[in-house]
Length: 429
Length: 145
Image 1 (cartoon, rainbow over the protein chains, first blue to last red):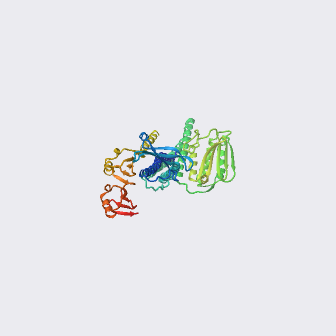
Image 2 (image 1 turned 45 degrees about the vertical axis):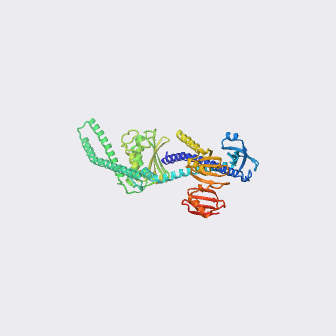
Image 3 (image 1 turned 90 degrees about the vertical axis):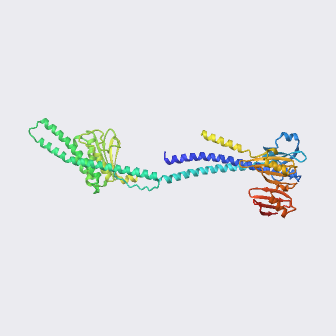
């Protein structure tokens, strides 16, 4: 759930509770006031009539053209004692003027005259108008309630968007952050919390960057320093093997050690190469046709690995060009080729190389898919193979990254497929 | 949710309590003492036709109607706010002294039919239909006929 949705939802919920309470109370208060006004005008009407009657002035007609009506008549003292002097009622009343029965508010007042008689005055006010008014008020309150609630939700959303912007800028920056390629964080804000977040993110990035640099330097130095001792070891072994006095068995052991040492040298070279590429030591690029390069090297590999009896298909639809350093291009192509030749099952395995204008794919038959996420990691190997350093694909990946190329892995139709495309094409998709 | 409902019920109950601001009949004995003294002093011979009390949240008024059609209105503390006489006249002594002297001086013949008092001052209505308005310091501010 997104934070903005959560905040807006919770705020709207709280507002709706408060607003509902408010609207309910307001409606009740207004209704009360409307009823009061009706009663007040009844009281006023009644009082005027009583004073008029008591003063002996002429009484107005029982219904004076308005909807108000009254009846005034004498009652017995017993009746007067038995009934409350003032009482209110809601009744259906026949309005003579309209010839209709309508709901009305009734006020009955019993008062005493100077002659010690009791009179009862009944006053009616129709409440049709009152109900109309109440319905109109209810309608307006509901309408305004909905309007207010919507306005509040919108305002909450707007305020949230406005004030949380730096958070989303920072998140975007973190998403795009890549080790060794830090972009400056442009996130101006006055809010202390966001400033602290920005500073923390930048500090963490800087620390990572530093560690990464140190690590790179260490690997680079280590492999560089190991080159000479490794070469010396190999020379000494070669000299030792020239010795005529060695027995067949001893020579065999020495040969095995020599091969292991050769593997180690290759590994060291690859590591050193990786470091050099990552340090940007192969910056001079030129437009190179990768399929021609493959053609150059393919025959050599076919020859070297002829004993494995693989069927190789090379299909070129059109040339695949890349802006790449020449020596890196060679390493890339040979690594992919070697990978295919080494990791295909001997006798019956097949290799398929397809080139189109958009992509270059090197595929070899296999039984089980590899872990697509880890296949380009250093020293990731499905199964250990003789004469393989575990750095070939990592090297290919690094070369592609520095040369605006993308390398991907797919497993379909029992084939491991390594596909190279141009990076900007990928971005356009 | 239960709390909200409870709150609603409380407010409803409160509202129902407020509803009692219609007129209620009373005896003269239920008037504030000041009002009773006023009636004894100036309306001794009149008989009460109807006495009632109006009770709101912010106000409380008393109305007394006599059988000759005169009407008195008192506020919460028992001071009169309105005297209206149809058949009789407003008792001269019931009015504040400065108004009495003003009337004696300017309208010696006049009979007072109505006098009203509110926060702004006094309003006197004469039998001639003349209406005189006084402010709180008994200065005449308006004469209207």
